[in-house]
Length: 461
Image 1 (spheres, rainbow, N blue to C red):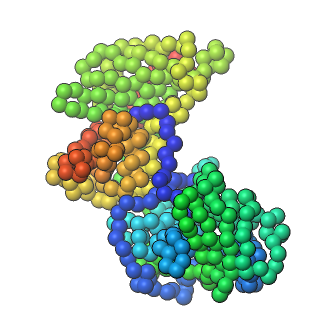
Image 2: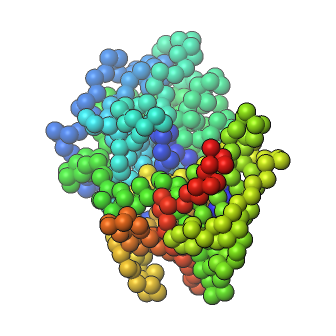
Image 3: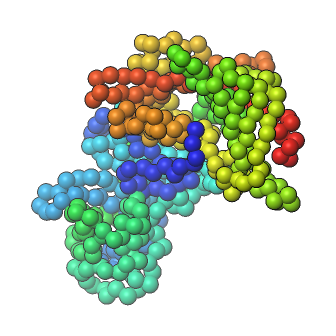
């Protein structure tokens, strides 16, 4: 475990939903030509444009700022044959991007009558996610509220543009900033962005610019007629929002208790961590001492923050009854905020819990050669989820990911329905020596919801 880290994706992303977006590392090419056109579910049919179709640069930019039906295609390199990168789709109910020759980069958000859910491409097929929730826990109802777009932005700049122009240069900083945010880049990228050379011809708006040392071309088209072929295909295959099966829902609930004991064993010893919303301790099996941290919020006693603590006795994989005493040093906090969730990044913060759709049944095929499942088993090799796990469990501190390359996660879930005790085995697989060797780490997690230490609870209450 480690202090909380901000996890950043390496690729620019279009969407800024409440849950982090994923860019999968697996999946094969699928021809866009095979996607059917569905007249009864077409994403373009739901748009009701109030503006006439663009005829010049100003009307095209105003269309992008006021309407909800168009597409961007991004190319790298100059004319006459730039390399196709992404298509960004904007419709009333679907916003997102994909690359038809690299479908693993598909990241769409779909709005239906209940809420908004993600659609990605993973392991050679389209998969949906659960409904996205806002920070207050409510379901997101409008896909445009959680998507970075040009809708409704830069009105002062647009009003200053001359009409009838089909070629001009855009230097307005606010508009350039809005554009790179819409394309998923951080605001700091503005320093590497050149002026935008805009042109309008044949019903299409073209914006040429340089970002860093890369020449890019954005072509805005399909005004009022944008369709999303992958979404149409998804519907034609009977696709709908993802609902996790009962076992996975229970797995997420167990980790959300923020009470658990994590055991990791090697040939020499077993290391254990006790997690609780208000404290964290660690010890080696066989020791009669342990140490950790306690969050206390007692402003009336001037004791506010996270403080170091030591304990006598021990805790096992399924019991804290062996703990005989705990001493907390309140002279000086090691962290000013009395919140363990900020001080340590508990497993409940993993990206996995909002992306259960990326778990496939069974152990990873490589792990299945080494271990045998005892309960219901699942696995994923989705790179963002696996890398987030590595960060969450601080594996990268001992196994740098540039040498020990993360590969997959496997879960063995053993639920006890009678006394609600459960054990979850997690197997993390990695490769090293230039992918010629493999290794794995094993974590056994138990004691869900049963790590309270009553006397300590009384002390910090």
